[in-house]
Amino acid sequence: MNAASFLQKTRTIGSSAGRLAVGVLFAVLLLAAVMLPGRASAHAALIATEPADGAVLAQSPAQFSLTFSEPVSPLVLTLVKPDGTPVALTAFRLTDQTIEIDNPQTLGRGTHVLSWRVISTDGHPIGGSVLFSVGAASEPPAVSEAVDWGLRSAIWTGKVFLYIGLFLGVGGAFALAWLAGAGRSGQRFVIAAILCGLVAAPLSLGLQGLDALGAPFARLAQPIIWRTALGTSFGSTVLIALMALGLGLLSLVTPRLIAKLLALAGLAGVGVALAASGHASAAEPQWLTRPMVFLHGIGIAFWAGALAPLGLALMRRRAEAGAFLHRFSLIILPVVAVLAAAGIVLAVIQVQTPSALVDTAYGRLLLIKLALLLCLFALAAFNRWRLTGPAEAGDAKAQGGLARSTGVEMLIVLAIFGIAAGWRFTPPPRALAIAAAQPASVHIHTLKAMADLSITPGHAGPVAASIVIMTGDFGPLDAKEVTLVLSKPDSGIEPLKRPATKPGDGSWRVDNLVIPVPGRWTARVDILVSDFEIVKIEAPIDIRP
Image (cartoon, rainbow, N blue to C red):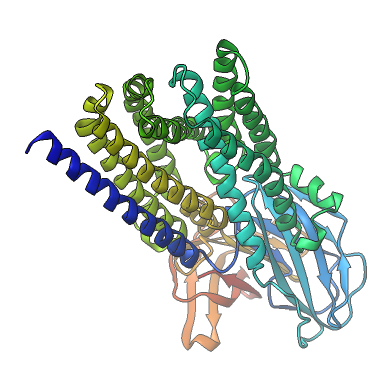
């Protein structure tokens, strides 16, 4: 094959790949929207409540409690009475992972709703409600938990444009300062990308405040919305991102030496901004995850930011295009290696098990991102081994083919931004596993005896039960035997009756127990106090799916 026919074939491949990439972009965004769960959630999960969801109490409780899988901060706590009257709950205490909430008034008969909205350490708000009744159940008051698709779409769009500003804008400014030499190709594009980021950053902060408080768009201008948003970890991300965007913009209008320093600081700011909040940065161990997010972020900015300036320089046949391409090709391999290594570490921490790639929305989005990355790597490899050499030597046709291929890479990168923005609404498998491993617990209190029962993990399947027994006045109770009985009459399953053993730590334990179905079970603890006395105490316990 001669050089002319090879380059003609390359041009055809680039044109076809461009059309294919446009189709892939729209298909990916559609898939991302379809696979997102119907309800926004973050990595913290509610694991226990007092009163329990669905409980019927003899009298009004003095306080409520919500226990989560990880520490959270309350945003909005509301009690809705049977007649639909909302009561704001403002007196609460944080104890480890539990929010203890004071009940300001004696509640009447009927079904009440405890509505809550909290924010976790990764900066993502979550909300829900607990139903309980006093005296007897009644028709529950209406509490809307519908997804605000308009707000969700705005949050997703703001994320995408913020990524454009950080990666294509600040990354592009770095490429112009360090790789382009005296060339200015793509500067207008870089400025436009940075301006997108400068608009998207504060807008995303306001949307964060709306989402945190479950408020409508009409409240966007209220100070409490912005104060709430700034109080989250995402507030730090936005402030650092604004500084990085400002540094990138300044680097475009300052002398070359100063521009290099400003662009380098802006690139570092991109990594710091991303490491300040989000699922990955909040994962443990943070001494590993935050540096990995930092490296992954600056790697993306370096690669993606150089694409537009380089592609435009090649397309316009600029004299400096060959040198620009040479500098980029020298550095990109180690950058991609670091980017890939950091991404693999974060993916392993977040996903944990291969099955989670298919079983969770987060994993399915990751699979789509990996497929796009494989396409991107394949295209980059083709460019490097078949086009880069002739293009660096000044071959006009090779430069044109490489410019078109760079445009295709840009489209794939934009699709990846869309997938990454979708993670805002999906809890990672790591978080789901933490929540699933939490025990289901209940305190059983009678005049004769008490028991603290914990079933770990608190979902259906193989579990272990731990029981601590006491007298009715919290004194020690030296029982001869303890038996755990779990029953669920509506399931058609015979009661599960298991004798407990005493391991020597003051508790009683039941191992090799299988709870076949989730739902509300009745837990009865039979305590043989003496040869002539047995005390039986019971309470409902909720077993998760």
